Image (cartoon, rainbow, N blue to C red; front, side, top):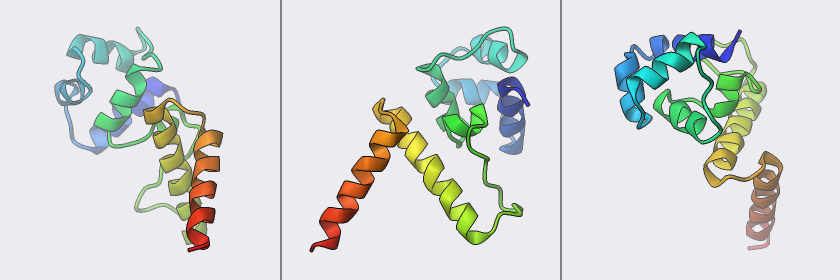
Length: 116
């Protein structure tokens, strides 16, 4: 599945219009329409804004990490790991860091709190 399909699918899952998503992503509806139709590709700056507007992650839109749905067949442990990965990816995108850097910082934070 291409990113164009995932953009449209997620928007429809949320029951939103292209105008609503474009507005929430702070962009012109014509530009968002071009992304859904595959006439243009969102930049690394634009994609996180679209992901937030669609209440998902960049990785889920790029299909690096499976999206978790309520009717998922994932086990509880797999679902938690998937959500953790999505969270780390979203934080990394928002802070302009590599996911590995976020993971390291989380581990450092955990370690410092374990000693308390």
